[in-house]
Each structure stands twice: as C-alpha cells, then as structure tokens.
Length: 321
Length: 250
Image (cartoon, rainbow over all chains, first blue to last red; front, top):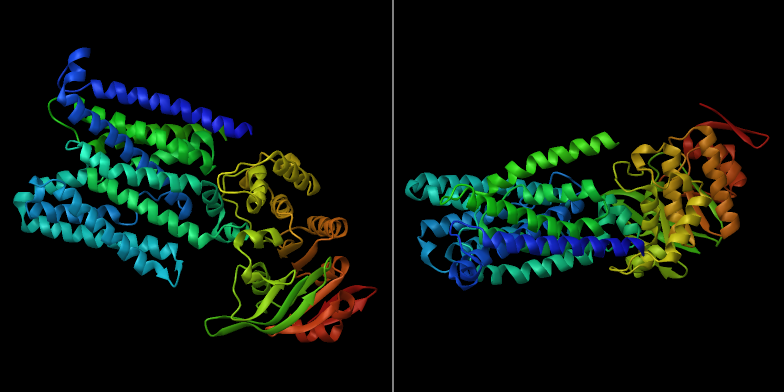
C-alpha cells in the first residue's frame, strides 16, 4: 500500500510541475506581451499553446515508447526509432515535400503518417512467424529498413537538390509548424497508447526478466508483446509525423527515471510521461527563444541538454554502488 | 497429479522425446535422470507449458496443460530454470514478489497477504536477509534459493526444477536438496527435479524417472531405478553400489 501512495503522490507533484512549466513556457517567446494582451493574442492561443501542448505530448509518447521497447527487447540501447518507423515517416515527408504538398493542410504530416504505418505493417509482417513475434528479427528488420529507407531519401535529395534543405530540416524535427490540428490528431493516439502501456506495466517487468520467466509466471507473452508493440509503434508514427524525428528523448528519459527510481516499470512508465513531456517542453522553449527570431533544431537541444545530465546521473549512480 | 500420455516432442525433424507415458503421484519427490541430451529439460518445459508437445498430452490435476490459461497454469506449476538471470536490477524481494503475479490483476498492487507469503517463502529458503540484494550481488547458491523462493511464492501444487544444484559446491548442493525435501515433506508439493549427480538423487529423491534415447527407460523408487545394468545402458559407464553409494568406472 505504501508504494501505491508514493506513485500517486510523485505523479501528482510531477503533474503540477508540468502544468506550471507549460504555463510559464507559453508566456515566453519572440513577441513579448503583458498579462492582459497575452490572453487576448492569437499568437498565444493559436501558435504558442498548441506548440507547448504538442511538445509535451510528443515528449511523453517518445519516453513511454522508449521505456517499453527497452523492456520488451531487453536491451537498454533501444529507442523509439529503432524499428525504422522514423525513417519510414521521413520517406513520406520527403515524397510530400518533393511533390510540393507543403502548402496543403497536413500534406507532409499525412504522407509521413501513411509511410510510417506502411513501415510498421511491413516489419510486423516480416518478423511474425505464425502468431509469434520474433524480437531479434524485429530489431534487425527495423535496423535494416532504416538503412534502406535512408538510402532512398538520400537518393531523392540528390536528384532534387533544390528541396534538400526542407527535407533535411524536416528530418531534424521541429515544432515550428505546430497547430491545434496536430494536437487533435496526435492526442487520442498518445493517450490511448499510454493507457495501454500503463495497463501492462507490471507485465513489462516480467518481460524484462525474460520472456520464458514471464510466461511461467502467468503472462500471455505473445499477446502482451503484440499489443504493446502495436500501440507504441502507432504512438511513434503519429508523433514523428507531427514534428519530425527528435532523437535522444525516448532513449534517455526512461534511463534517467530508472536511475532515480529503480527498475520497476510501474513507476518508470508514469514518471516517464511527465519527465519526458517536461523535458521536451523545456528543450523546445529553448529552441525557439535562445537566438530570436531564429529557431534552433530542437533535436540538437535535447542532446545538448540531455547527454550531460545523463552522464552525470550515470556517474552518480556508479559512485553509490 | 501429473499425467503424461504418448508425449512426442521434436525440434524441426530432430526428435527430442518419443512416446513418453508415465504418471507422477501427488506429493512425490521425483528425480529425472539421464545422459546429456536425452530430453530431460525438454520434458520439464513440456510439463510447465513452455513448450507444446507435437503429439500426446500432459495433464496436471486431470486437465491438459494446454487447456489452462497462462495465469491458471502459473497457479498450478512453478518452474525453476537452469540459468537464473543475473543482469536484472530487481532486488531479491521484488524478484520473489513476481511469483505472486498469477494471483494479481493487471492494475492491482500487492496485498498484505502477498507480502506475507513472500516473507514466508524467503524465510523458508533462508534468503530474507538478502531481500535488498540484486542478483549481481548474490552468490550462485543464494540466487538459486531466491529462485526457489519465487517458485514457492507461486503457491503451486507442482514444483519443477531444472538442475538447481549445477554450479554449486557440495555443501550448497546438500543445502538445496534438504530444502526441497523439507518443502516436499511439509507442504506435500509434488516435486520433479532434473539432477545429474546420481548419488544426490539416490540420497534425496525417493522416486526416479530414467530417460534414455528420447524415451523412458524406467520409473520407480530411485534405488530400484539406479541398478548397475540400467546405469550402463543410460550413461555408458560401469557402476557399483557400495552400501547405498554409487561408484563409477569407465
């Protein structure tokens, strides 16, 4: 019982911190407002607020997916992009940019989503043997597909050098074009996906110990693994389609949480939601405010901030052993 | 308790078990004996439901293992595997607590009852003092006892162990076997254990199953099973029984 109170307590505290951070981050920006004009401004309502919400959603989704993959694949190096969904999405985005669909509403995002979903279908098809999912094959297929698709994208860029810059910029990830529509498209998938992962967080612990152990302790391994992979890959596909490829969050946030609170996924998953959301929110805020009026790529901020923090935590945990 | 009928198992075209039929009485403490590669581990995995036989059935309590859901099965059979994972960052206590998983729903946390059962299992296996240790900080014998504690926490009528004494020194081998004897005696658990040391089996396991050439060579009380003739057939060595102790020669 004691543990349960702690999880709720910590989660509530994190939620409050996240809410305060969201409020603060939406007040800062290139254009300055006083309090009254802020709430009246369309810049606040239609540009900043959706951007803040989207960055939190994507950060939470990527972190939860990373934590899930690290347990399902029993490999600390896996991140949400390991299955090649990001490169699948990038291919779609590149095609959309080459076709000049940027002006259409969700033209690039929609195309990215389409190819990301096709990629998921493809890797699941290849890695399934009967109704079993072979995780090593799944990982290797993902890695291989990533190489293949990256090669195709490079070819496309070489053939159409005039579009190269916008394709590269898309693959670096950005929230600059975030709108409420992005939020409404991404939100249901992320909420549903996170709920599914939370539901199976105890099974994730057992999968982390080993699939045979999990099975002999009463987990329907194949079913659970299939569902988890399905919902997390969908989350990644929608997140990447909305904002491009933002690295590092999904790899490191779960590890940071793990270093602080231990290996229990019943804590790692809920805390990752808040920490991941908060982290990406702060990184995006820095990305758009550090050198106004220009924007920095948010992916580079996540690594610049996150890597030293992670190394510090690793160092600290090493000393405590 | 455990009823095996015409069990066949093969990996691809390679037969591992052929037409195995036997049954194990409730409360029996049985050693599974046989040379390397004769299918002992595969047999345990078929009984625990980790593997599905190609032909034949394994029943526990009158119901085929394949008919149980994973949860129900985990309430009937506990399996202690040969090589416990050592790279896991769950403490011994958390590890044993996982044995309660088959009794909990997805979002349900551990009840006081679960905690008591875990404490009991750990005290019984003399691992309570290790409850905060990680697998990497424990010795082979300690880790093996933690794994047995997890299996006890599952509160199953059947306990399967795959070479729990391999990699242990002689004192720790005795310790594990005495622990299992006590569990068998006090809780009337049906225990099936794969052992390589025939003298260990002779000393602690009243019953034995001797496998040879992918099938059953003999089932019976251990002293009757381990005659020099059968040892010669099953292992290809000569043996002498000297006052209940086996001596081997090539």
